[in-house]
Figure: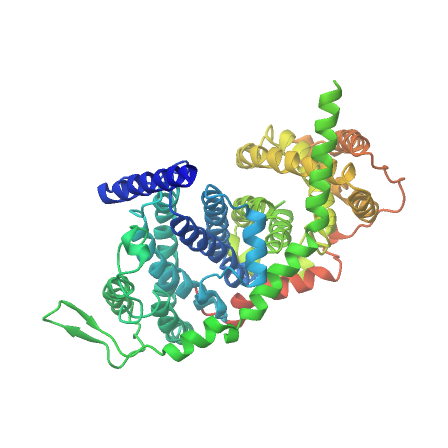
Length: 321
Length: 239
């Protein structure tokens, strides 16, 4: 009984320290005591974030061999490498919570862990590479800038670093779109078509409306999340509409209108049925993306086994010396 | 040299999202990035020397199959990871000795490109050697796979050292490299690494040839079809 009381006491103090830290705005570090819910929430969010970076390499990788100039190919290769690097960085950051990369990949394959829904859409033309960089990375930046102040130290630091590279990605996407809008009629049509297909899924990246996902959740209390879905979505729309206008692209939303009073754009209704359908597994590429990841992972098993065997052999040899 | 870089870069970039571990995905596509840069430098210079106003992109995206001069080994499909690694080992070893010498070329542009390239190639080669050792001396399965790859690729290695009359002329002017010297160094280095990796060095036999005359394997046409697609489909467009 005494022991139980003691444990409860320790637990209480621990939670109090954690809450005080959060309250002061101090970062939580891997060795700090934290509630299970906090740890689990972060594991889920950070592994999902890492998986998104990696799965996102697929639609873009689809165009590397067809990039239309040597410069375009170099930029795209560099960008995709950045995404993979972000994945590595985020996997490592998530590992500080006590989960291994292998476990995270197993969760991805079993369907327990998710990745960003946006990558369940196909990259059909070269203009899609522009749209992904400009709109998808543009939306991701808005979210990630906000996460730079998230309460978990390793995650926050990862975001600071990642944001620097993401802004380069957004510029490269915008440059592709701008060049195409200055080009032939075919190119302009291609760019507008990509805009039409990627605009709404990009808005959905911020998640359901605040009315459907209340502020009062743990993520806000723990300062993992600092801004609401609708706030972030609004920020993205306001900066993107102007960019589209400059290069002559039309936003595919007939209800989009400047709201003088609120000093922001009102937008039309988002098709949440589509959002939930795609998240539920019935998007254009869900099966393709997952099948590919599983296949490549399984096909590479013999390589990883060889690397492990070789390392063990060398360690043994060293010990005998 | 530009075509070698361009076509090998194409093959390596196909590994994006296809490698056995994320780190390797990044490494192979990073090499592809190095090689695209080298292709750009070499093809720009080729266009300049030609004097007809063709750019690096014109040479990469608007030439036909028979006008490409990359070695056949560069265009072969990736195969499995062992095959790609064995190829990278053979080609990067060749490139290491080749560019090492080319740094001293009397042609200052070539010498400058070589000086930049050698730094990259040194790394590609070290990476390939690490994997040849791991796969050769890893598990039985990996040993068999890399041995098979070495055996199958062997007949494409002779072509790397072929020379023509014009090479002798350039060699006399100190512009080109001394190929027999490079061939000897290559053989010695390759034999050393393969034996450390517990692999058997294939016996010398028939060597494939043809790229000097623009005669390729059937694979090059498919590479160009994909690589040149946008430039061919929209000839008026700039990107």
